[in-house]
Length: 167
Length: 275
Figure 1 (cartoon, rainbow over the protein chains, first blue to last red):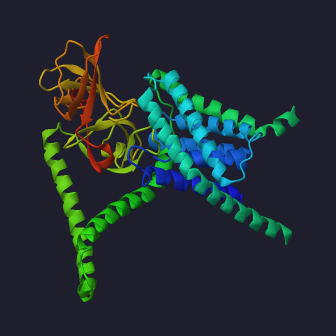
Figure 2: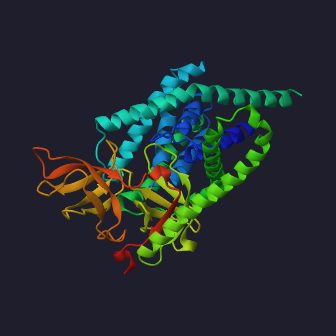
Figure 3: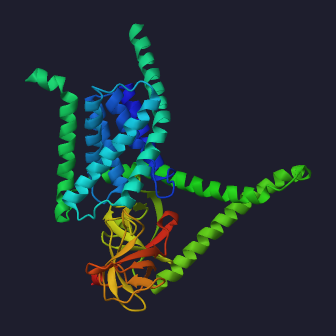
């Protein structure tokens, strides 16, 4: 329960930061994606799925003309990460960088799929791919630090819970 | 069966959330939008935090600018430092007030040039993703803002209102790849649609190969889309490429407004929408 509240608070703060402070030129570091990858790897529960859906929906409320686009993309990323977690074990936070980098491309593919199916949309050319590469790189660079912080928070709450249950 | 569901409950719930997302998105294919009971609550919950952060950023920016101007002071000014800081704080307030006053005065002057019914609004949040260009305004239905109205600044066109709650409005910026503003070239009256692009900056689409266009040409709203009044500045032509094939020219545009720096806008209604 406390762990769910932690992730809820982190999600709220990330959306807040992404809608205000974190605007680096045309780029907005996709920290919500990093949280999605973290939950897919380290906390794959039904609650996490609901949380990811709500996180994507929140990003839609503040960013997208069409609701559900980011919720769809994040849910797909969660599935991809959760399935891959059966084969990939990310213990060192540094290893989260390539996973987030790949997840960023999965998310973009999901977004492109929705845009192509539901909206009229020009394809993604070289310029767009460069843009996507930099976006994925930015998220990947920030991922290890965020993973370390999230892991520390999770360990702290789990140890507290264990000591309460022990006593 | 039950053990299968238990074993795969995470995957199954994730697939359900994918299906739920598609259910929410689906009406968009027909240009409709599903009712959103959560969005307005979320915007209302975030609003005080976002406004606070925006004000803090603005204050810090101003303090930094003033600090940079003061950096050359040496130790002999130390006893005056306290007084200077007090005055600086006061000056910051005045500068900020003056800056707000100037911007609002410009908006008011500009408002007089526009059809009546324009609403002044402040930006409370930006897009949370690199792939979308959206602003949230602090005015909504209660203030007279409606879906389909245009958002403009004294410098030019900003975007279009795509959804409204009672106290906020979502503006799709002209830089978004899904936006489109009916435009004419002021000099030659050639027409096209100015839209954002994932490839480069904003572009002008559907300009016939035979149309007369050159770099530096000013682009203004045609008024035919019913969103913006006629004659508002959109930007200037920065690059023209007449390919050896195809019906249209490739035209890149430099916008008159940098949407990332916008703090206040006027929300206006086009002629057709008004009728």
